[in-house]
Image 1 (cartoon, helix red, strand yellow):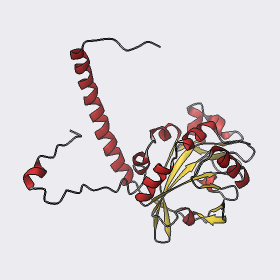
Image 2: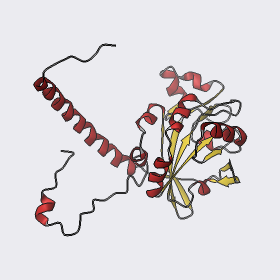
Image 3: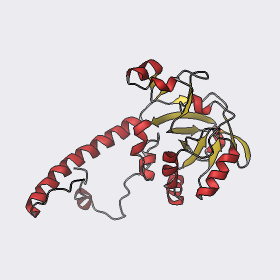
Image 4: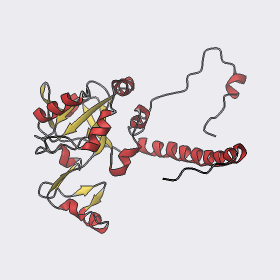
Length: 246
């Protein structure tokens, strides 16, 4: 692996300013994309999904824990496996108490769902020392309906919004053979007793996730933050607030 070029401070500053312009362009594009995501139409959940959890059988509504939004990590854990997917495990390792607290402060719950039976899930979770809620969807169609368990004998093949015919054109037709587990995240919104599916992301789209803001940017309500001015700020002072995105 080669190292970057060594240059003078003036040359470095020039290169850094060029990169800064590109970074600001990407930031503005990401903000616009987040707005489009929040404006995406949503679909009413009509099916009653059943999950196995530490307290027994539960429905999708209970996963919200009284909050208005729900983020589900689709963790790859086939019922026949003794351990969970290494990549999903790496992501789960970063799901800290702080992350959960920040999401909860924005009225958003976070849970993990896998098709493995609950006893395997709890054994693996305990070995890893994880604290987030983790449920088994083995007794429901949840994984199939949200295209993270791919099995043509159960449901039409769909992965990252491509049908089997489309997948075959990009050399991914193997997804139509047998059964496979795939990663992803799905977002849900609750309005009273009615639940809506607002967004799901798969494949490399999951790599843009990180802290709580990145997760909230995938939800229908977004970051839910408004600029609050300190009391007594004058109109002149307000006019001098810099636009850091410019």
